[in-house]
Length: 352
Image (spheres, rainbow, N blue to C red):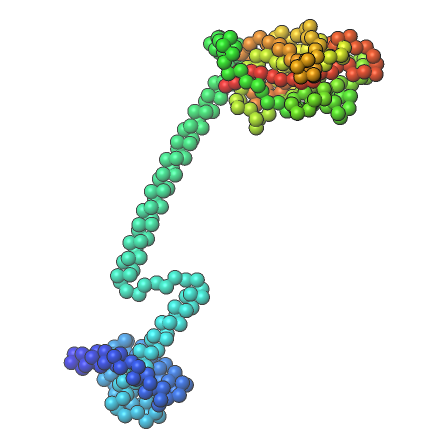
């Protein structure tokens, strides 16, 4: 035990004389010799199972290793300790450099740092668990709300398909009488039977910035057709509501005898070809447009009301299309003129 204590004290003394011993080694040994000595001392140290006492007691072994350098016994111990100290430091540095090159983090080597690391891992895992629980609760709430929304939609769909909802009719009638929640329905053009030219396309009817009217095919091309047909659909992106009960529509007619006189409206689905007529189905005696002296334009509107029917609800799911049927004009018979023409169309309904 006394010798081991002396060895430890000697190790401390060697560390205190670090610069002096390093200079002494640089003066007495070449680099190759120092590397060889360090490797030999380190190997011997490992074989001694990290026992500094055994390493320092084995003077013969140290002298044998250092014999070719002509070291005396007093300096052998110093060289042994210093060589091992330098080699261990270099070896640890090399290991750390390799870890850095591989992107690995340098791990702590003492128990306190390991305990700190374990505590950090535990705290992080606790936070992860808390966030996971919060996400789980949010997901459950989202599913609950989605189920409620789906249930409401099913109820509305059922009301659309059944003629037993007197309360809805009363509600819509009251809204109509109070002019409550009547909203202009955003439309997109879908299809038609044909038109006079691209300048007089049906899109003109729903685009406010275009002043040209819609013009149908000429009279001679429609002699075998009883009506003209224009199909529009709900604009999903620009409508506030998913469902509309149609209440009225507005038309800005043409001023010549090709202006429309009687129309009908259907709602339905072009894919299934199911259509439902709105009442009154034939709306007759629509007037020609008159000159507006204030604006110097033919820009007057006529409003035509539609009877409320809970079965005939326009919605963006299975009844998103509106078909406008043009039955008669104001007497245009010229085979080279369009049979129908008008400027603008707007649809209004109670949204929910």
